[in-house]
Amino acid sequence: IQAALNLTLICSTSLFAAANLQITLDKCVQTDKFLYERKMVIFMIQNKCLHHSMFKLIGTDENPKDFSEEEVKILATNNSVMTSYYFQKAFISFAFRMYDDSKHFSEKYLDCIDSTWANLWLQHAFQAFH
Image 1 (tube, rainbow, N blue to C red):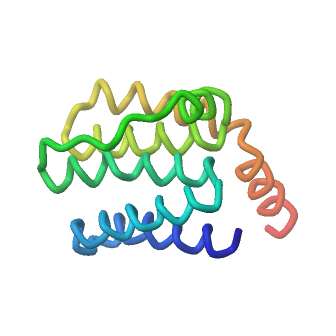
Image 2: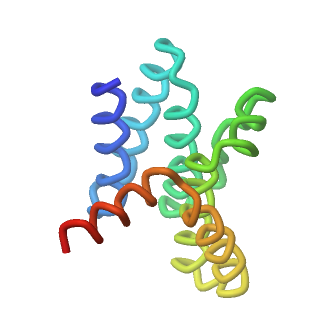
Image 3: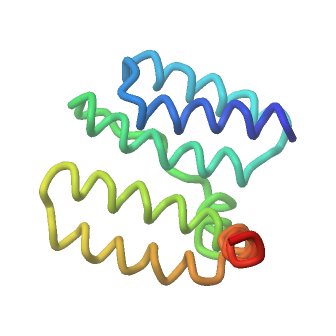
């Protein structure tokens, strides 16, 4: 699991660190293959959410591969995955000045983040140590 987390973190931080997007996209594709081989579908779906952002920022007409039925089910039911999905959608909408879409996805992101276990844990930790 640690290797999957490290690879996913490298992909997401490379996107926001203004690294070469084509190289970052290639790393994400390799990470997807790694995650698929190890049946880590939740991490793979979160990583796929980055693909759309990278394709938009690169400026290609290419779209990421569609989600399978199992992935769509996880996307609809897993709050952590929905949080990643809506964050990426809000980020790209804001970057391309689609403010109505940005507002819509930001609201959905904030609705999801309220009940995501990791966010709740961080909020409790912050309150305990601050």
